[in-house]
Image: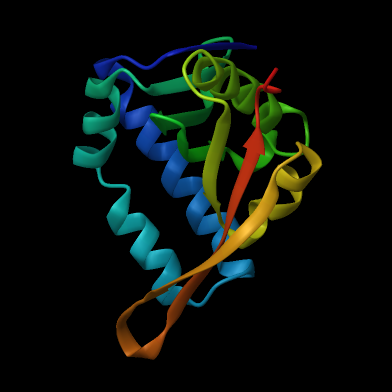
Length: 155
């Protein structure tokens, strides 16, 4: 598998990765309002903005996009892998690429971890430094972990 920078002609495939993953995995952890929030957030316009920034990449297996990752400065803003490809090292491969890019300019990577992803990030050396909560409709709260990882050891 290969991780490459996303191009505009990949928007539909990236959108599919995001929405398939959210609709399959998130309902196991969150109420429907959270799943709907993430689906709305990850609109095609949002995907296009990420591609335009140059900070979105895709993990490709043959000619199939199986995962995607995005960052903004030292903040990893998303790692999504199609459910059939999870638990096979795809998320770690995407994180390796994002961390290597971030490490060129920053000592630390930060991210907001969804509940299903916390264990992956802990396994990769991230530590929880805070807890976030976002109020949604019907009194539902989206809760997440704020995590960070030291990428460079200061000399």
